[in-house]
Length: 423
Image 1 (cartoon, rainbow, N blue to C red):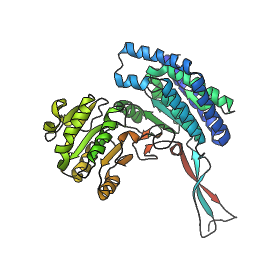
Image 2: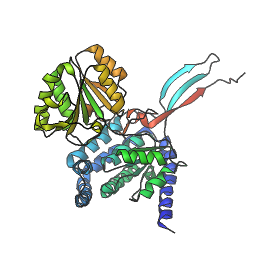
Image 3: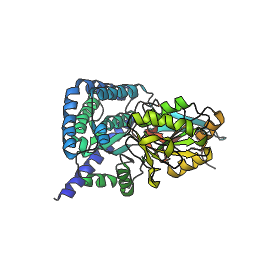
Image 4: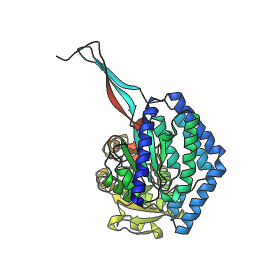
């Protein structure tokens, strides 16, 4: 038997096990799911040493391989990150169970009572890169929503993910739930991803989470529906009525706090009426933090020595670094046109004290999260009250934005009759 056939059989077996487990998870009660997540929270803290040791193996291999700074940051586990993961488990455990809830009901003239009931998606497959926290975030959300999940993490985080998957199995078993509800594929070959993409017999939806090349590759191969998370080209528009000191803090947070993540600020659009006042403030504050600017012709003279002339492809680019594209615009029309052309439907922000401008921006900026006077960094499931997220969908079917428990269910029609027949 050749290697490819071995991989095909291993991935297919994971699909079969997940599909069988998904039926049991769909019927699982809220208390059992809650117990599994609370048990997992305790295990993450109890086994901290074991998890950090596994993660250090991954970090050492990444150092030898020359992994860049942003990816090293995403790969690293710390006691604080493990505590956050445990907190997410407890938070999701306490959320209302969506399965079986009725979204709406109405009665037809013939007496039929029609409703829409929340039901699990079934089997959710995740393909993701070097972020071991995704292993836990994805699993707890899928399990809370009554799904089974197949995980295929990046090879960089293999030891971390294997250690975390063991805890997931242990937590499910302790709650009397099927351990097969979480399948972790530890095959590092890209062939495993290709086989998973063909597993539509067992997988109901596939979610790729990582760089643009990964998302495109998975989308092109997948035989099942894909919830896409493409680039995070996030903009902030500084309106002429903005509170400039407040806007400066918002821009600083969006760019500097964690530049390697998808909700980091990548481009700033500044109304020409405030450019001369605001841009030197930005140059001083962000420049001191190590930010360099890729500036258009109007903003270049105002940004000091950290600025260089922008190339055409700097607008619409995800830098994942302390680099910010800057452009001066005439008005909101020009800002919205720029966002429509260069944005990635991820996150858009306006800084303004004008209510009408704020409401117009909320309506017309097409993104999974649009904010007024707040950082792009808030487009995150935990920050928006979802507890955790399985990813941020930048496609519009069936979810748009951070995907929490509710977004990992769908609805079916249910009908209550009293003997009615169609005439």
